[in-house]
Image (cartoon, rainbow, N blue to C red; front, side, top):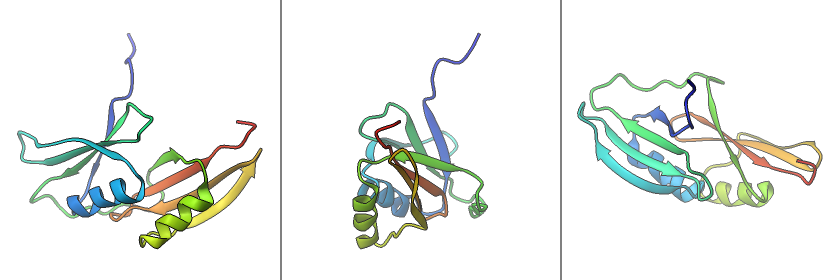
Length: 129
C-alpha cells in the first residue's frame, strides 16, 4: 500500500510572525489556519493560491534555536514573471540571493532566502515545459 498524497511540509522556526509576514506578503501565500498543538507548538498553515499542499510553520517555545544549514532543503514555487517578482520582493526588502538564471527552453530560476534562512526556489516555466 502506498501513501495517497502530500498534505504539508513542516518547517520549525524562531520568529513565527516575521515568517508568516514573509510568506504571505512577499510570496503571496494564503494563511489557511493556525492553532496551538497539544505539545504547545504554535502552528500556522499556508498554501499557494493554486496548490492543495500546505506549509506548516512551527514555533516551539523553549526549543533550541533553529539553525538552517546551507543547501539543506528548499521549497520551490512557480511564478509567472520571475523578473517582475524579483523587483517586487526586493522593494519589500527581500532581494534574490541567486539569479534570475535562464535554464533553457525559456525557463528561468532564482532563489530568495526566507527570514529563518530557508531557501526558496522560484521557477518561471518556459513554453517548452
